[in-house]
Image (cartoon, rainbow, N blue to C red):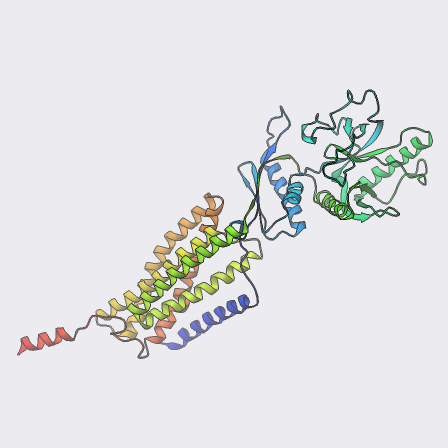
Length: 496
């Protein structure tokens, strides 16, 4: 037996295990899923306008909606969000998130932004206020639908009182023309502080086409202002007039506002801290784009972190108990070979945790189902070593030396193990691609562990046993081969 290839293979394996251990020692840890560290979970149902049939590209619209939500969540720095489609529903899982109210607002907000010229302002004191337009005291989603392409009467926004129990004052209504600029003309949105007011605003930066449209419209409005007519330009966000500024007196008729920029005033009546958060959130949803379809919240709940920790500790305890039982049995039955099997399990554990931590860098989060898959893999990895050890014992029983048996036994043991693991890999692949939710995490971990089992059997167990077979650590007795001495004594007595 040539020891050099075995020693090189074993050295490389141990070096990779050492590198994985250093990586973990530097603080790398797996990202835990929602069921392990708690967080926020929600399901949203797409809503089509009443009477409208589902379009042919409905699935593409849902996928685009998911990307918009993901961009919003990523901008908040939520670690490893899971935003996916379940049928036509949108499922959102945010591990570690705690600010439920803010996230609920950001996820479900449509953020349809349009700009309209104002035809008339209907004050709450106007005798026809109740008859014209929608009921502004009703929630926005219960008001008469507003079509930006056609214009009409729409509600303004109410000044929010600091006292949450205070009744909001009646708001003005605006009769507006069809939209002349839409939110897709915005290149950027950012929070800022207004000059001289110290109030937070949302600055908008248009693309070249939107900037030119804005300049043309404000040039016309400057002329309307000079003629004594209404010169308001309404900024409408999700069917509510957020603000309706007039053109600054310094803007000349026919010249307009250049520079591709505009502002939205936000948070009137709020504290400075609340104004800042509202400005940041509004800038975020405008910057990431509007949802291409309205979403209705079906469920939205906070998952307890305590429950997740309890589940993780219970799963780890079960795994440790199982590992301890396997270690005791293997060491008692196979002696030094049992220690080899346990060393293989240790390398398996280090590699697995390191790989899961690396996968966390690209978005993977370990769930309780994944932990269950890893616990199952402990038995699979131990079983691979047992198959090899038993083949070594069979070869020794056939009269081979321990050294020869270790070499010859690996081929048949590896083929047997490969056949069994292929079935496991196939089952894991089928589960991963056909199942949804936690079952996919179980399948992924089971498949990963099965691949690592094959690698460890070839790169660690094989060279380790091969090198040990050249020493006194492996003997007929230590591999529990059949003792042939009694048979020889019997044959001797018969011969006499």
